[in-house]
Length: 348
Image 1 (tube, rainbow, N blue to C red):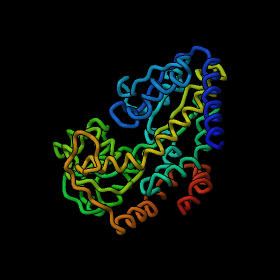
Image 2 (spheres, rainbow, N blue to C red):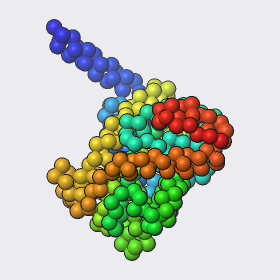
Image 3 (cartoon, rainbow, N blue to C red):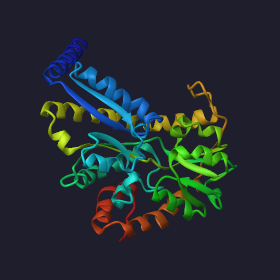
Image 4 (cartoon, rainbow, N blue to C red):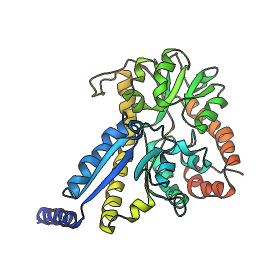
């Protein structure tokens, strides 16, 4: 009897979804996604817009999507173009906008969160602050925040732990990463993701930080030898839409998109830990890697001393420097929404 009830309920849900899809007006969307050569785009974003959305809407809602790099963009200009209406729906890494306002760094300070579960809790807790920040007057509506796999260290020289960054040149992609590296006695070098492989080949940098699976997708295993499996941060992406473009959509389409974008983002968070491990496995050639090409990097497992050093640098350097450049309201919001989760207090 219970099986029949469950089956009946499932069929009713499917029929309700189908009925809703039939009532949606024909809608064509334009989307600028994240970096097109990375797993976040290829495994989640692109299939969502090109397959899931049309399927769930019975073909009523369709979308064209290209990664921002395919559009000739570097990333930091995505939100500005979205606020101007040049881009309708868009995705970009939150750290790109740290120079616009340090609040964009709040959820992803280097050393702040040790695992995907805590990263999700921090982002969810701070999401209302971002929704307000990217709200009235910005021309942008926030749709959600998703992660990359854990940001970790790839090095083309032997390292045994975090302390070995001293004296090394390290590619970083955000201000908070740069402050973290500098505090360890390394030299931070800011460069675009696509420039890292030749820079590693030519010894312009000794190490570089990126997502474990992102580095695999970009074949960093060909130019680096050691991978430290210690999450430094998670480099979340912001998913948003131009407010005027959103307001023009039928309310039923708005509801349909919000519900399903939330599901896509949930899937990305659910996959963050697994993709982090996949990156470790495939860069180092572990048997668990299911990819056809495997790297031969050495996996450096973090010690308690590494984790303690990560926390100390964040507490003593990264957090105070961030608090100094963020507003009093920003610091208060951090303490209210994030500090309780990670047992930290920022001081202005």
